[in-house]
Length: 222
Image (cartoon, rainbow, N blue to C red):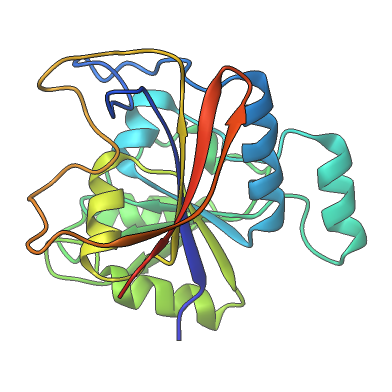
């Protein structure tokens, strides 16, 4: 068993999520940022790859005090569980996702530095080990389901999006297209990695104008 899993991503019109230097760009409008916060508040866990942590240093918490209060009234923690996929355990010890705002799980492979793993555990971080040189994503989502995660939000980056889709672990995808073109043959896209052959088919569930961009919602077809 695994959680219901969706990817949420903001992209330029030409499909880029940042520039060639992989520097975070403001693609989402205020309306979309509010939508993302609402999705976080409805989720049991938020997952990102180590690349996102290293480049953006996100906190991955619910920004709205009202939404956090609502979660508490529902008997849940104020913020969802934060999950970092980090095969080699490269996460900085001062990363924002390791603060006390929410529980954090760092998923590593067996090649991860054992000393670093032990340090994280002493800090109170739940370190999940699965996979030889890459994190076993199927084992990870099964573990998340086992500890009570029923809705999993994946916030990238491009490599994690690709890996989750490759393993057949994604149910829906939200793509917000901001009003910009970034360009760059080496700039990361919504999904990086090797091409899917055959391509993964999607069913369009919704499309609407949001702020100065467009929000689409897709179901991943098996």
